[in-house]
Image (tube, rainbow, N blue to C red; front, side, top):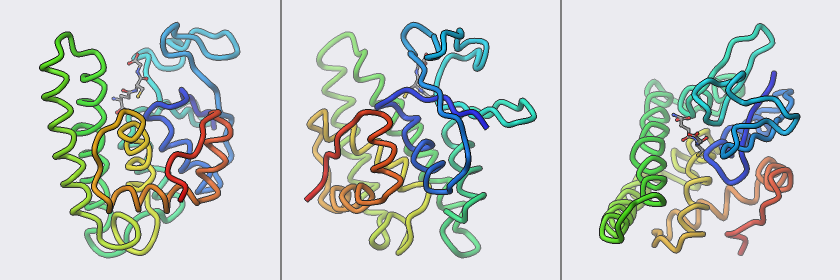
Amino acid sequence: MDFYYFPKSSSQAAHILLHEAAIEHRAHKVDIFSGTVEDGRPYALVNPNGYVPALVFPDGMLLTENVAILDWIAAQAGLVPPGERGRTRQLQLLAFLSTEVQKPYVRSLFASDESEKVEIRATLVKRFNWLGEQKQGEYLLGAEFCAADAFAYGMLRWAALDGIELPTSLTALARRVERRTSVAMVLAIEDEAPLFAA
Ligand SMILES: N[C@@H](CCC(=O)N[C@@H](CS)C(=O)NCC(=O)O)C(=O)O
């Protein structure tokens, strides 16, 4: 299976989960600004929509969208919270992170005026506070690491690097997630440093 990513982007969660689930894959770095894969191929030939992450299965099927990719990897490796509504609850948080955190965050980077930027950042503080209130144990959805933790970790890195105020429950979560071997492996591949280590 082929996995396409861009360092420091939202594709980091899928990258972490592929390692967490020990799913064999070839990781291809994409320059999302020039639209080129590191081997020189135009990325549009892989994903016509141009964004990462993307997974290409051995039969050629292209899977895009963080929520779908993370849900698929989670199902392969049991990274789904237990209980009748465990998967649904995880999908709720994945969709929240995708639409209520990631998208507004990216919009804030390209906001044309300062007041719009300030407004989006204030909304993000509220979103992170809500996420912090959802935390049910050492991880977001209980005692075990799940796919939502990987996505949350990537978003918490963005927030921390950008000085967005985070509740202590989430900095504790990020510190715990950062101690996982899968995270250390992906940070090394993506040439990034740990941010939350105690
Ligand atoms: N709808 C996609 C969006 C993913 C996304 O926004 N990826 C960003 C990196 S964080 C990207 O590749 N942007 C480049 C582009 O849109 O051309 C998803 O939810 O997975």
